[in-house]
Image (cartoon, rainbow over all chains, first blue to last red; front, side, top):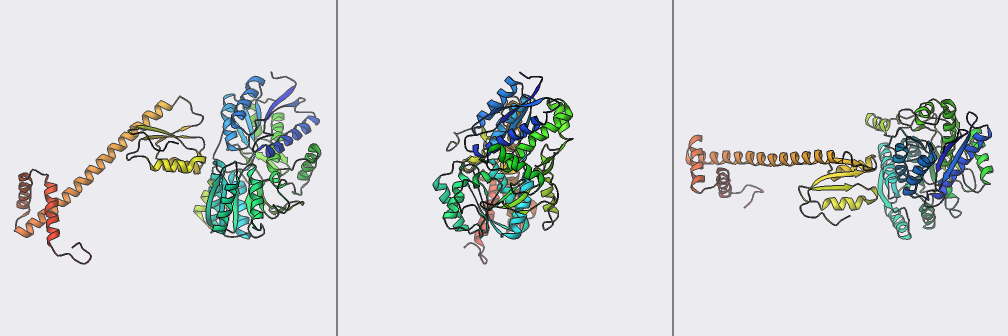
Length: 384
Length: 161
């Protein structure tokens, strides 16, 4: 059902379920980018025509909806996926239908598909500046906590290794179910009391994040003394926490609402205007936003949305994203990004405590990090 | 996850799931020795998952989504490599026994030569004759002789009494 006068795209992002809150910010960012592109006349005189689906944070639905969009609607480009299980559910369908998928979420790395463009952070991009900040300013004893699935295990392994390579110590490591219950929160708090770390790295994902941070504060822990650092905690979680909970904790991401550049301010204002200020702005939303713009740039160059024409064009374009200029790496299909570290400030812009000097190339298989460690354990990471 | 494997399982196809790491490790500890031929099913290729694959002792992996094509080839190659490994392990055990037996025979001959004033050739024939008389292997005869000898001499510091 392709129509000659529009460019159809599929948007498979949840508005319900365990990651529905954060994915909703991604949906709204896609809507905004599409509106901007269409307001400027579309691409080569044709408007983008998004078709939205809500897979309810359920991998099976991501798979069937991608298949439906590609097979029944002739759609060749998909935007979506959040947790790794959802990306893994979609990829075989995208590959079988010879489509292209933009995956705008940070993940654990160690993957490549010709049919996927990874626009969230690869593990090297956020983890290295985060560990450097924590080690230099917070402390030497790290506790690793996470949800019980692939991203937390791998991200914790990487952050733990980086921390040890700087000379730090990993006190312990613990995993709890995605569906976090009171007894799991109690176990986490017990382990914190028992191991007395200087800093906690959390790869908790989903709705349990809010409950854990609140319980942490209620148990009397002070984020100024013992901060929780995370890449998977976002503004969506922070706005749902009780007052006095989030202040002082640490987040690493390529984009923060408080980023003070013309591109970031313009994006933040447009997002607020489009959503009526009802949704916080997140790094995955920014990745979804620039993914659509990158796609439009490449499409303008290629004049065709089939993967064989679109993919080579994607490697040629650059887009001045809210976080800074981004482009897709032709060897890995991951994106060159600007990772930052921020301290959460309640009711105020987050304080950005680490800014990259230059854009960080993606290294999804951690080749440069491994080399750097073997060559000189005390050297500045090879990435910078 | 079953408590343990059914008896005489030849082939085990095991899904490596991150969220079941502890159950997997517990299950792997119940495997018999030698363990069955093991193929792992993996959905991810990151080091944390690879670590589990290596710990499982899998000799091949089937990647998700699982396709029928390639399964038979993987199964055949894995079973073949497993059999070769078993054969190599058996050979290694046999050669190790042989080397240790030879060492025992050598020590027994030395004892006979010193104790009864025989030359090496005579000591060897004496040892063989004693073994034949009792219808046991020369290595076993040699071990008995060495053990008797060791028991007879007074124990040194830290030795057995």
